[in-house]
Length: 381
Ligand SMILES: Nc1ncnc2c1ncn2[C@@H]1O[C@H](COP(=O)(O)OP(=O)(O)OP(=O)(O)O)[C@@H](O)[C@H]1O
Image (cartoon, rainbow, N blue to C red; front, top):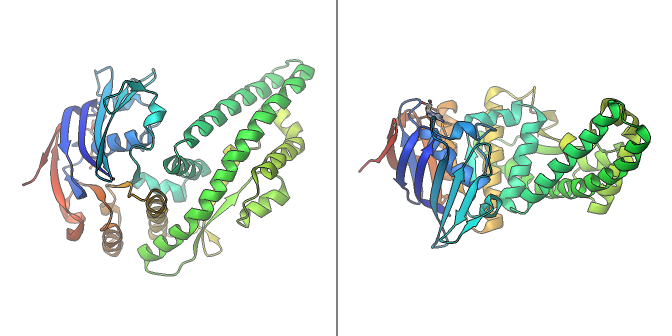
């Protein structure tokens, strides 16, 4: 798939922008702070309903404006679909597909698929477990948008269960608490088991692509791997770390069993200690964890391999390429990695690149150039 046109109103630094795009490579070039990343951030937002840079929506709206709008024309297998999103911080966003009436924002997920690689991705390797959980869960949704609903349900259940446990610490009658808690245990175990199951299947499918991408980026046989580390009881945790994918029922039973083991700690601490929100994915190079052991260059290669692995998995699953976005990454890579990356993505249907200096982008990947200067985007002839 590819984006044929991008329109912005009051998004970040843009009052308005109209950008015609083409399949193949498009490179946005401009000095720092001119608005290159803002363009690809808007495209990524339509694909994921989230920014790769900020957790809140307010910074996405041009300072002084009340709302921002992004409109895209997306082409898949020769058919074009219009998708429009209005961002209203503090309120529900509004979405529209084609010429139809408003739809719930979640319904536009799947219209556009993107894989975005940015300097922030180094945190996938060096950062906290939350970054890797988000990577995995975002990829679940990119693969099958219905997982967005399960994720939201899980977050709600977790919030309610935590509130109940906290109320226990604040002196609410423990009898009443212990009568209500099983209801939330049941909800959490049910949705949580499905989420863990989906993550395990995703990891199993993704790992070979990541291993292959790592070897291509680093030109070596490094045995890059992914391991699921679960807070479930010991026997189950060992099985999951070994790459087993149990049935949902078995995972659900394991969550209940671990709740029983952890009951006292949960009541004392007032927080849920069991479930997918406590699990983690570790990245390995051979037997060593990447975090804390990998060199700076190896960490970059791993981050890149995760994104390129995701790209290959989606390409295989969907039968069409997601739009690949390489935001500001060439300046971070050494010459060899730059060239290997360029060779690896050259056959993607659409690659959007941002760079402060055109010379950082390998010439074979430069494609169509766009100059970005404060508030305007101009395609070079
Ligand atoms: N909500 C907003 N309202 C107005 N301007 C904004 C808003 N958010 C960001 N900006 C401006 O957008 C600019 C940053 O744009 P962007 O991040 O796209 O830069 P860039 O061209 O990718 O730069 P670099 O090469 O440094 O990464 C900054 O000048 C910033 O002040």
